[in-house]
Length: 154
Image (cartoon, rainbow, N blue to C red):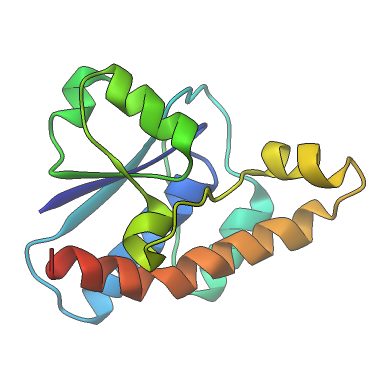
């Protein structure tokens, strides 16, 4: 099964999900699942250094990550498309593909995984970006076993 994680810029949430899933799949010798990530906007930007540092704590090296932008050609290569937020799912559906939310498949909840700008809109500009990135990478790490288990049992 080919899985694609989607967020906006493909440098934080979907990238983290990709590398954490690859690590989990490898560590647990799970066959026949490949994972990638893409963004709805993906322009040339580097991942947050804080994201790379946090992923490194989980033995994930995303330093060579290159952004990918979704397209019909990209989406057609995947059996399951997992989006971080409803607006990402809307973008995927706009290209005539089905998708599920990250939290739907992990925890059976219809809830977005917010990015830093969405979180800032809710919590104000004085938020601690480092702490937020750490929390989201940890959240994705903790959800990864549930994601993979639920994919296998689908």
